[in-house]
Image 1 (cartoon, rainbow, N blue to C red):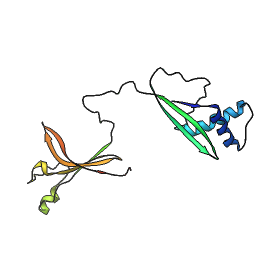
Image 2 (cartoon, rainbow, N blue to C red):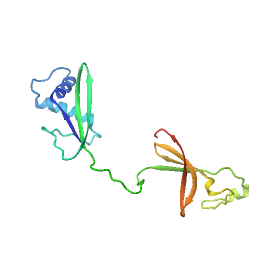
Image 3 (cartoon, rainbow, N blue to C red):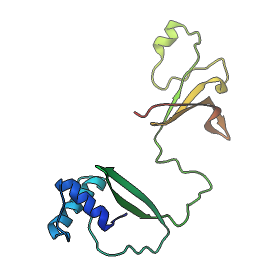
Image 4 (cartoon, rainbow, N blue to C red):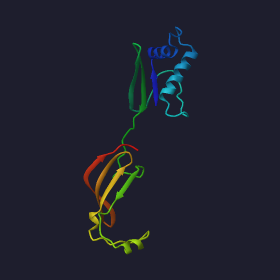
Length: 173
């Protein structure tokens, strides 16, 4: 990613930082001050540093750009951010969801059971249900995203959830 700062914007940032005008021609110290200010503004972590480079940006690819306008005290500074655009979006025949955190919840409707049977249940116990497997309501939630509702079932020998089209937006956790 690149950030371009023109001379008037450089001067405006410097005047805000110094709370007054800088030298007629920016000194090395003044350029360092503005560079550190931009670095603190745009750095994604304490380990990431922006490097200053004089001259024009020459990109071989299509670019995405954003003009970040900072204004105050009757003046404004413009930081232009550039990054290379992806040449072509990769399309796969089946979406890959391996990296999307999902939470699955399924629950049974109430059904009668004898206390002696309940007391004997342990991990791995198989319980016969009177209703069909397609009657078990489920929720699938994208962590920090929407909740989708459906019923538990199977298709072609694989466990599956038939979504019923209902969804609710939840707050991120």
